[in-house]
Length: 404
Image (cartoon, rainbow, N blue to C red):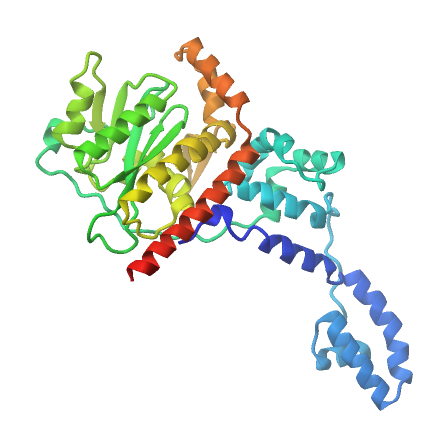
């Protein structure tokens, strides 16, 4: 099982320190200038020792060192341009650790999230000067200092409910949603590369307007388990649910789930996207990786006793971290310019901030959110999450090894 958000955080820091130790071109030129007279006046054995030394210091081959000393190959000239404003050897390890704790968000979101996190990050390396550097750094500079890991893909476990779809209206796009309460919903199967047997799935629900997201794990996608997860998700939302949208999968498009929303005192509108058109539910589809795969990876979870553990992680650690402390961006418009499409996004904000800006949300619910946010510490949430995930992965590997 892979967990990109919380493993390998020291690799970049180590590589960065090593690159800083290596000589730059100016130091190499000074070193070469000092060695050349010594090399020319040395005997055969002395020249051999100097060449051994150069191969270690410069990291080059003996043939290359001989040509450098003979003046046949000039050293590369330093790159022109503005000198670096920030000491990367100091900032990159700290920035990388913060970025890793934030689930590797993009640079624009990282720029907005840093002020929310840095006061909670107790580290002796963060002096007032380092803090000013981090907060003044532009998203482009952060992008140059950080590299994203590769992404993996899983298999799809959704099957359209052919007999039930005619009674549910299609709503392809959600560009006209201007208030909280309309959610997109999807499931992610924790089944690796085989759909055989029973396994856990994660139900993801995201509000289109505010990006507030809740996740709950279920053991098999039976209608009883799905309704239980949807009830818990609805209770955790800081606003009233008005519309429920999903894909055309049979786990949502059945009489039990649809009836759960429609047969109540204040019915909830149920709509669906077109089969096999993921863009119809793009707000939740993108959460399948950032909110599920980044956390639990792609391994098969085929033990029902692990489902409640997954829900504790989602409910108490993962969802509060994303909803209160990790900014998100929303696409405002797309403009075609020739063969290219230019995308414009709004300013990154956390779902919590978007909820506080909504006039439609009751003031008592906003006050409850403010109280909850004041009692949360993002660094403590991140540390506890990392411990829980490592323990969960170790337990899962132990179960799989025992079963094999």
